[in-house]
Image (tube, rainbow, N blue to C red; front, side, top):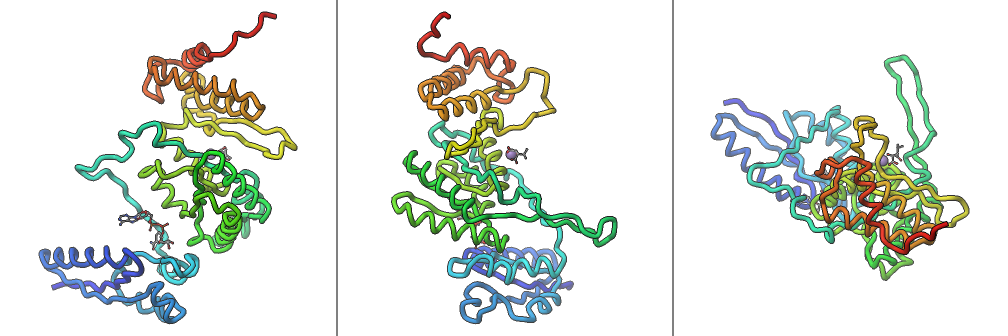
Length: 359
Ligand code: NAD
Ligand code: IPM
Ligand code: MN
């Protein structure tokens, strides 16, 4: 009977539980299909780290190399910083064995229902506060060994204490205004310098807002939460790149980029702020009257608020709401047949308030 040597690293938390089940299922399948699985279990985990100061022994990688495959549960648990646990176990395995493809299939399993159906307007009300001046968007770096097989590029991120502090503080102030909570998007398990620093500043700022509920969430898990439990997301504060990605995701969760407004704000008002929708120039639909103007109209309403014209801003938002609620005039991206101009006109006609004086 053929057999395979499998290294099993249950790891931490539910990793242990789910791996136990998976292992039993595999054993049953092997038995039915005429092969054997020879398991070697390794207790490499945060628990081990706390006992020994290492996630895995010094010769861990050599021991794994003797196996045909590795089944790993999950790594990381409160008490050991994520960048220590992940860089002490998971990431060295990926790197040492050149596991350079990370393949992640997604499909709707039979009988399961996509969680996005049946959401009410009140379930989805979040704000992404995206750092807009530094972070991963940087010109520092460059190309090395051009034209050789050893060519590589370095793209640096820059996170300044002042920059991180001020964006996080803005998020807390906004949460206070909304009566909401702050979630900080981090990735301090993978990024060992920038994100631990981001988390440190987040904790410092949070200490000044004991009345505002707050938490930090890995950006990957937060992306899943935005889809699964968007009702549990309020103010999200994120670095430039994470905020960019999360803001398109958040827009998708409410039906697409056609309705997502955005503002580039200078809160101190030392300089003009800029208002532009989240979406881009959409060359695929450009010039055909297909574009949904709602995102840019709501963006313009944000500009009115910024200018202190709150009543006018509210009137524009109310007009958008009224037209969308009525539902007869919609662009194709939100399930209608109207053109950009027709939807724009319907909203314009719905804007209420005193008539402009005849000049
Ligand atoms: P997470 O994926 O562990 O959890 C995110 C959310 O999904 C939580 O609400 C959790 O309850 C839910 N969830 C996850 N797996 C589930 C399952 N099998 N069944 C039901 N619900 C499930 O992400 P996190 O909270 O960001 O990270 C927790 C720790 O895991 C951190 O230390 C992180 O660094 C680490 N991590 C490790 C791996 C890995 O080892 N491959 C991957 C991701 C995160
Ligand atoms: C945005 C855009 C820009 C960004 C691109 C065009 C550089 O995606 O405004 O969200 O990432 O900031
Ligand atoms: Mn973007």
